[in-house]
Image (cartoon, rainbow over all chains, first blue to last red; front, side, top):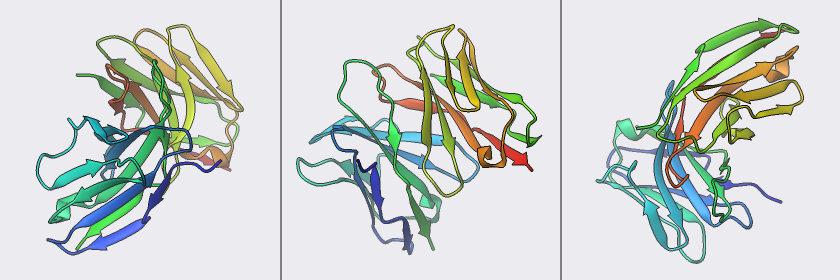
Length: 115
Length: 110
């Protein structure tokens, strides 16, 4: 039973380029979350998605950042016109559909470096 | 706004020297508390979920407890492989927006 998968694991971009981060949730999980972790800081919630719906994007910057979770395929976190401050580890987590709080299981992360 | 504070920031133990990590939280209503372990360069690995004050859970050398204001992660006779950063987190209303603490970096020396 494969866990949460993320790719690429490492991504290098120059300022002004676009970064696309992909996340495949665990089998049977319909909820996807994206977090950002800056060096020496905690994980910060960015966005919560279900299939074809953004449920909560309150932690995501309003400009340059977008996320989607299409009916088919992985969830995508897209960062346009990257700046050096976007350099961080981006983690995806998934959880099953449930009426109650469910534990989120994390992927290995994508480490973005902006030159 | 939910807040999570972990202490100490870093902890160095000799192998076999038991200790506890603290997680203090401020939430509008307790919906649960999560503990994760994170190794360098990896994603957080789930350890425990606690749902109500008084609840305890154990896994190998780890034991997590919960009160109305804080949680403790007790490490009994730690081994070098227990070295990692331990993260505490609380779910927000609707559970999806989880607030994490900055973690306790544990180093266990042989």
